[in-house]
Length: 245
Image (tube, rainbow, N blue to C red; front, side):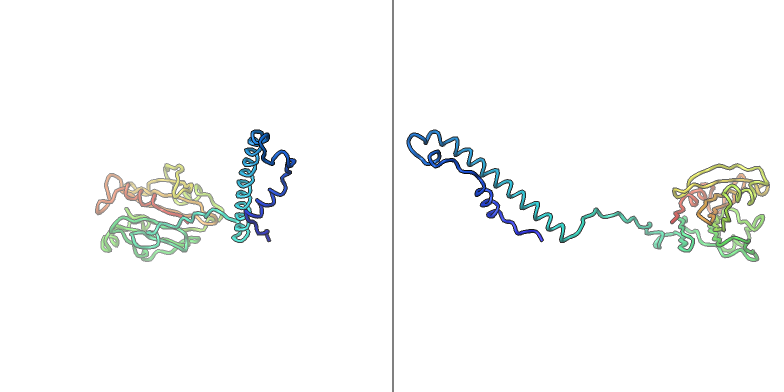
């Protein structure tokens, strides 16, 4: 408990501690009046110093007492939330189960599951996004049940494999392959592209995420654009928009 301080108590304490000169040196008389002027100035200056010092002491004591009552003061930490559109309100698909969101252009939708397809071992999730109408999408199955000009996002068990190994297993190793490294959502990614037929080409992105592998892929047709004005740039922009938790 800090003692109660006031300027009067400190002022009186400091004055009482000052040594006084002999009475003859400060009692006014005709012969000493002229000599007492410097002494008076000195006394006034000392009083000013004492008052200022007392005020500072009281302020510091008050601040210390207030800090003791409030506890330590810390600067607030910034809490940056996810973009609002990833939780709804715009054309964005969000997977809370697997920790990603992806922005879709207008009129894109989630395609239904591929009929008759069996999930391979180790695949945890698969979502396909398309600009095509339901009738167009049904007629658009290509080689290996791959629909050109759609974007597919898969989550797989990694099982210690590297992104390069998974890409080679998907087809990069069996065909002439163009591969390299890039960044998606501030995470390193492995990118690979290879032909799956004379007219179709696979483009795939692999992101290692702990014990899982996130794969984004799309198929383009050589020498032409997709339906409804979809181009390869459109598909690349969708892939680049992914946000990872």
